[in-house]
Length: 167
Image 1 (spheres, rainbow, N blue to C red):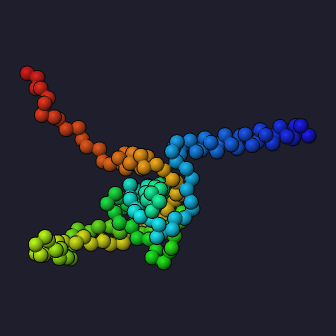
Image 2 (image 1 turned 90 degrees about the vertical axis):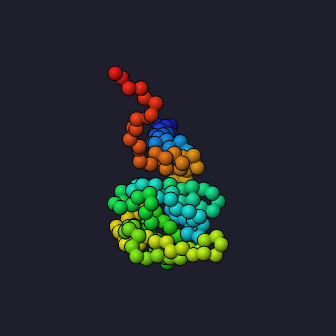
Image 3 (image 1 turned 120 degrees about the vertical axis):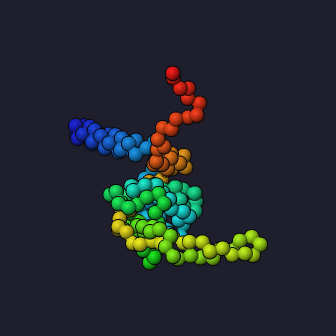
């Protein structure tokens, strides 16, 4: 009986250690999130890159969604279309990337201060690839900012005007 109890303790300890290691690999400030987020509670979605979308909800919680697979055509300035009938956004749900195609001939009038109007070109979108959401993970605002910052394109090293030339 004592050997059986020791085996149960050893298995439980190993499972706890594996779980802790997996959580540590996901980030020190990340916690498992819900499988779905109610659409009316989504205050803002931010596309980070072809693998990550951030969902900020009304209670100011930020969820990182690591897509099931890299989504071709999904970029920082992309738009996405979720099914209008769904009251929730869930892990595994599909969405369509809307690709921007120039400014086209579509335009809209914008009211300027003083009552004048100005015609401004409006971008056009065409349907792109369909992709799937992954799991939601709650992250801190600082981690969200770091993720966004790390995904920005790197500037090439530009020579500064202060460099001295050698003769």
